[in-house]
Image 1 (spheres, helix red, strand yellow):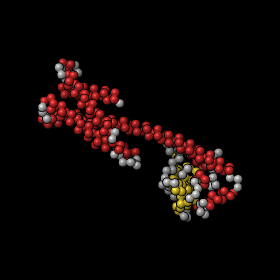
Image 2 (spheres, rainbow, N blue to C red):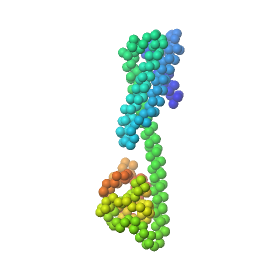
Image 3 (cartoon, helix red, strand yellow):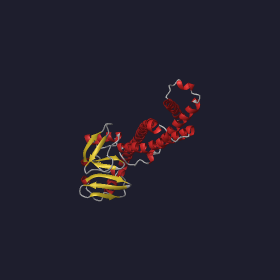
Image 4 (spheres, rainbow, N blue to C red):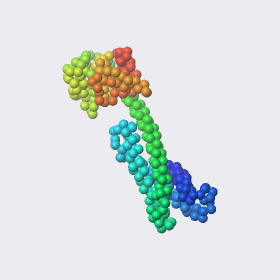
Length: 293
């Protein structure tokens, strides 16, 4: 990062020096104050770029949370121009004021700065802010994709482990007594009446046609899934069991995963991961009896 800053500062300082002196690259070699003036020009550009970059890193702290990607990037873009763009523009004007007053004893308002040079400064500010935004967009997209991939792998492994736990528990049930005991936890609700069973914030709910939304305690969804009819109920995740009759429709996404539409509508995420999608297709389209196979 520092190497890029140094290179851009040298290039930007040289361009600014050429513009101010109205000379070509070879003509400035005859300037007896070349080293001094060029050093000041490079230093002012370096300060401008440093303020632009460092202040842009503060923008994310002011962007509202829990928004869509479009809203997030829109907010970031606007706030970046206000915060980073405003601070960098102030830095450029302040640096020019100090340099001009130190060299000539005149204030910036008594020069042609605000009628000529300010347009170059504004253009540079806009260009730098656009570049910084594009860098943020690219980096955040890559990081978001990596986090999503890691989360997907974790969820896939958890789901496989969950199915294995269900399979083991089914084998351990050598009498109908445990099944009867577990099903009593459903508080007498007819299985055909259940739309789906889910947990939210460690509280478990049953959504049914007759009773609507009701709470129940004592069992996890994985424990229930081992006694519910596997041709009728599908363990979509550790937090959701769906009834075949509640699947209103499903949509195949661009990554070939499935997004379910349940009836009645479910307010939490219903997008199935790759592994769950494979099991769901087998269960929903072929009606297999054992999802753990």
